[in-house]
Image 1 (cartoon, rainbow, N blue to C red):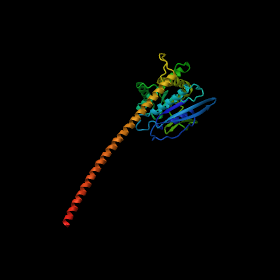
Image 2 (cartoon, helix red, strand yellow):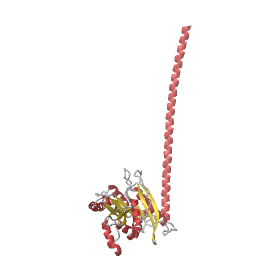
Image 3 (tube, one colour):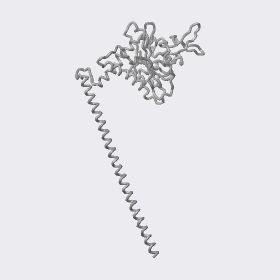
Image 4 (cartoon, rainbow, N blue to C red):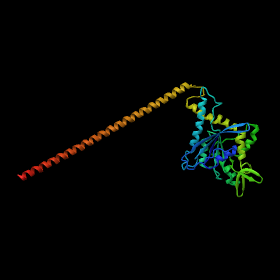
Length: 350
């Protein structure tokens, strides 16, 4: 299972991951002064009873911290495409082994929204629009205990309305399987999930729970009256994990694969079948042509620079010749003047 966590620094991504999998993962504190968005990937091998899970958590370090946020989504898109490309290269091998190959494709993107209580930020809309054809997006409202219940309900409705208005496609839990159709339908209506994370155990009466303690009371993260954490965990880990993998392969990866093969000239329309050898030869010819063009351009630039240098040297030579001629004339005139003065002096002495 590969999870991409997208959200600004300090919004609670690492804490929520610890809570979801009941573990203590990497808790490196990141600065808000990062010059750009960096991708940080950590892989863990989890085991609960007889169930083993290879979990990859990918964090978007520095996301949303820059003054210029225009291209904040690009490192995320590049990372997802890179994992698709790795899988495609393995798939195209003559001797491929997809069973043991480490599938690093992103299966789900947990997008952490700032709990403004009003509307979704333009940065979030732009980023989710850039990712919605690349991976399964599940939007979640982080630190939802910072807004009131009525504000939270309004915020959820506003988020879903703005996503629809901007044609942002988020992951919907499947309803074609009768065993989970009803619960998945209800969960789709609950989106986005409003969650609270905590690494602290708090006493509530005689019971110890995971939660956050405030002067006015305790927010229990596993109390469904307090937040949607339990619903998110059920949907993500227990009910729909396989569907997330399947949709990633069948929909998002297939879209990337089709585009890359089309770039290679491979089509499935049957009208003009192109072999890999022909495609290779064509790409090789295009590459050689491009190299020749670059070589010709460099050669022409070199010739132009030599010509410019030659002209500059000739100009300098003319300037030096003119300067020399001027000095020579001045010297002759000065010599003539001194000879006249000397002759006059000799005449006076005689």
